[in-house]
Length: 346
Image 1 (tube, helix red, strand yellow):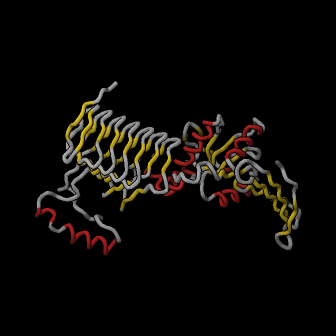
Image 2 (cartoon, helix red, strand yellow; image 1 turned 135 degrees about the vertical axis):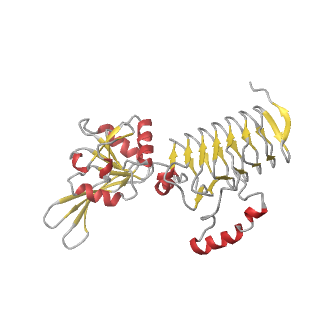
Image 3 (tube, one colour; image 1 turned 30 degrees about the vertical axis):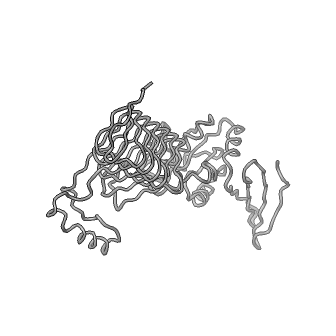
């Protein structure tokens, strides 16, 4: 439904022309600010995904669709639009070093290469600043979609903060309880998440290395911690319940002489940096990768220690301590966990 337009005075020399279009989700508002000279400046506020899809469908087909922001979130938005059969033509970015490069199969262009009638969707949280910048170049079909994810999905906010360290698959959800903790990390991917997964857990990187991978259609509940300095790999279709600990290292040396100064070093680091382990010597700490294969189900309160591989389709009973490899399609329980049942892999 389109409501009547109204003109409002917003200062002694500016008037605001407002047109409100009602959709199933919050209002889409187009605002034109008219200066004293009579010049009309178009300002587009946030719109819903549904409305943006409608705009793309009815657009002049000569107009290109451009995503502003060649980033991990831009990549996700590209995939979401593709699911609705909306194909973008180009990415644009303020980082001039990216111009001319290929991102997600599309060329990254500069603002000067955007045509007046092109549709631009901003994928950055700095949409007001970018909107102003684009309008200064006479580009007025500018949009920012506010409901690309639902209110419980914090994937977007997470990517904004950790973009250089993470790779997130389409339609995966990170809840508000999801955390990624570290002191410092090397400039590479440390967390790779597949598609259609749901995570409430915490990731803890104890040093600047480590890689945590979670596959497709996997679920990890709240209060579960994945503590990594080496590698933790979780496959597809895995269920991990709450209060679990998955720990790929010993944290300290097993030899007293090599760990006797650990507490003093932690105090020194905390006083200097506000956190511990910045100058920790990891050379005497044993770590080994943990691999959890596809279709595994892990009950609540389970602890999995370094070097363990849990085979496909295995089930780990609640409160178990897993110190050794678990065969595929077996049920283990206890402290330490032992096989209590063999499953039919069919």
